[in-house]
Image (cartoon, rainbow, N blue to C red):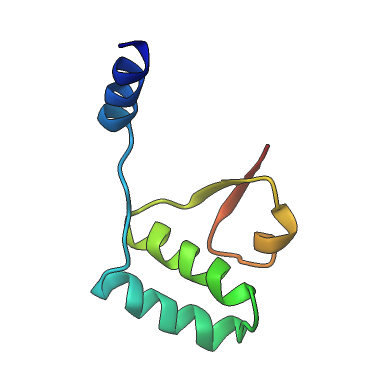
Length: 77
């Protein structure tokens, strides 16, 4: 029962974000600006989805993966 309550609370407090037409436009802009390759492509996609949802702060354990992206502010954990 405790785990079910915990999962219900998580579901109430978390929103999943997905790529959208708006994030695709931002992704194209970021690709043209940063020319990412390899795993950097995924980092740019994460940022594009965030920006499309009016999120400009990113919390990460891997600051080096995002520090070159000027459009966001980083929170280091």
